[in-house]
Image (cartoon, rainbow, N blue to C red; front, side, top):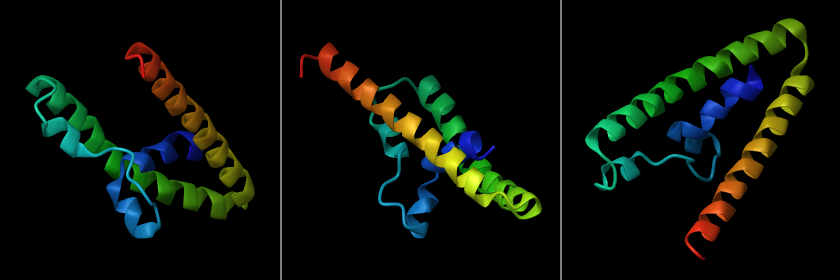
Length: 102
């Protein structure tokens, strides 16, 4: 649960209050006119849901850790999944660079 639902924290701009340096997703990109209105609505729906889900996930994870006394395993799972996300995003950047010749 920490690995999957914790990733939704990336879409939650509220995390800046808790020490995050950057927000992964900026909804302003959905209003620059580069995508259709239907696409904007679709993406915004998912983004908005991720914000609520991420806070629910934190609560469920906290409750589970307290019940099962496995905080270290939860942190490892979450960190491992973030490492994979980092690799994925870097691969996308590299692919984009090759596609556009940069």
